[in-house]
Length: 201
Image (cartoon, rainbow, N blue to C red; front, side, top):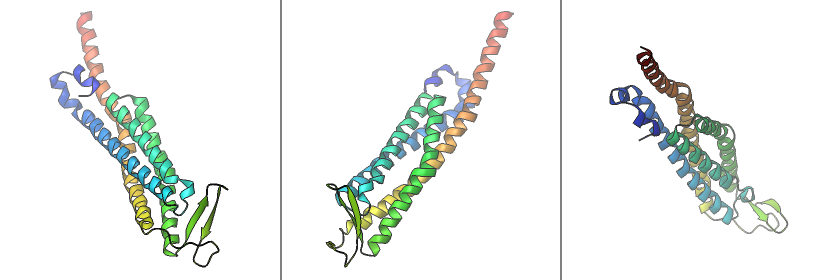
């Protein structure tokens, strides 16, 4: 039960049912976003361990952490019905749509392209330098592990799913801020005006 549901009488619950239902849907979407963040973080960690293409950038790890934080804000906002948290969650979803997801898609698409050409990036953490190694290049040590392409495709799939989740969550968050709160506020306002009118008479 959401915090304000106990303040609403039984005959009013049917009027605000869509509002509470939307909060539950938003909470479910936020939980899915946290799961996607954990999966993305795990793939990024695996990518870093195997010294794959652009593994030194660790973009997938930072993206996964961002998705986890964003989803956590959404869960808190949907559970507490606080407008500030809902606005913050919608803003983070927009950032994910505009910045994080496109960066992940470019990042993983380049990795798949170079893996097909038999190239990979070798990063030296001692000198803090990275270089692209292909067949015939000095220092080339063979192709990376075959699991590399699976990780790259997994990151692309994760980015696409996150795009859909972030888009749905942003739309629903703005709807709750602009619509559902007005729905609930109108009903509670009418009840308060009625109480004042009765007390004045």
